[in-house]
Image (cartoon, rainbow, N blue to C red; front, side, top):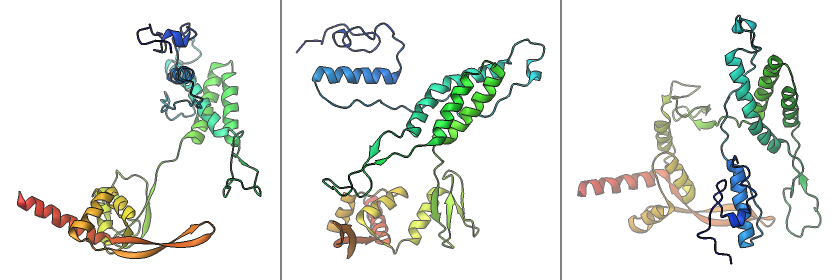
Length: 301
């Protein structure tokens, strides 16, 4: 193996020159993605590992996070002979800088060449040999066409209008919708949707209102008599701000006699229904025992 520990490194990639072979030194303005892939290719060649190389995806940083339809009003330019006013000129430059990232994300949303096994496919299943193609997204293809047409426009005023409208349409396709939470009112048991957990939680059917953290604790009080498996109880309590692990739950059972019940849980396996025995716990029993241990520890100090 060639010793490269003390050899000079490439200024562009940080890789020893014996491995990059100087091909990347001609242009040191490489993106982070290009550097990551180049380093992976060098490592793959160096260690002779036939692994598939994957691009590292970084969060997109938009110059214009929320594009809007922009029209340069002649009154903005005043007596200037410039085609665009200064703010609109800057907006056009920012929108143009966002085009490469928009096209990269649209390429992911519109692809249809790859295929995945359909649902229910099993190994050596000759009755369903075909693979289901990825659905084609015509809206993403239309967005690419609109961006291309906007960039081909010679008139800067018209280009600003068309490009801002095209990127506004693009963000509707590539942006994921805002997270929403479905919860229940602890007073009237009405289910409602919470759009922002940082705001005051208000029931749509009664006068109930609480911050999100207190609302979760109120729900634990209401659900105290419900039975949950160990995993479900740990997730529910931890989400509400009372951390609980499976090892801690086993400790409460083994050392402090936490009550539990054995129930039969049905599941589907190999084409038939299979029942298995699982332990279930009451939330109120877990919380009460945890509170007693905390109080006893505080009083002993």
